[in-house]
Length: 124
Image (cartoon, rainbow, N blue to C red; front, side):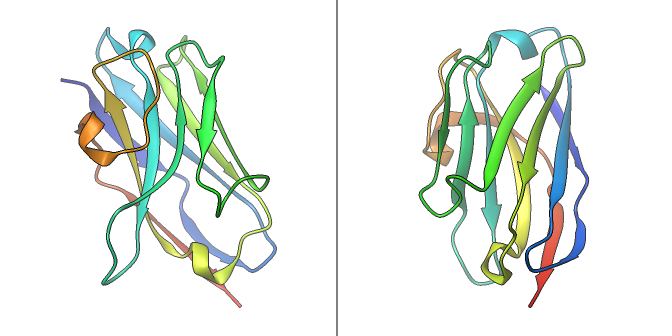
């Protein structure tokens, strides 16, 4: 399985930006789709964004579309989430996940490996 480590979270004011990174170990990273999810206290895990194995196809939750951008660098075994125009409701733990398939997906059950998460807090 792929080991995933997220970084880049922190405290930011509403309207600000953060860029999250997810470093993956393992030789299969470039063959697999990746995703970002988030979970706020007392809420279910929520899909944020997904990207296919090559980076040519992406998908977003309606709540982040136009504000967040997912990308990947297969040479560095890393996937990114650029978050702009942040809102208080974006506050959550953000988790990176890897599929065992080249195509992206929205359901958390479609992913086989998960990172520990990084906290993002947006103050209003």
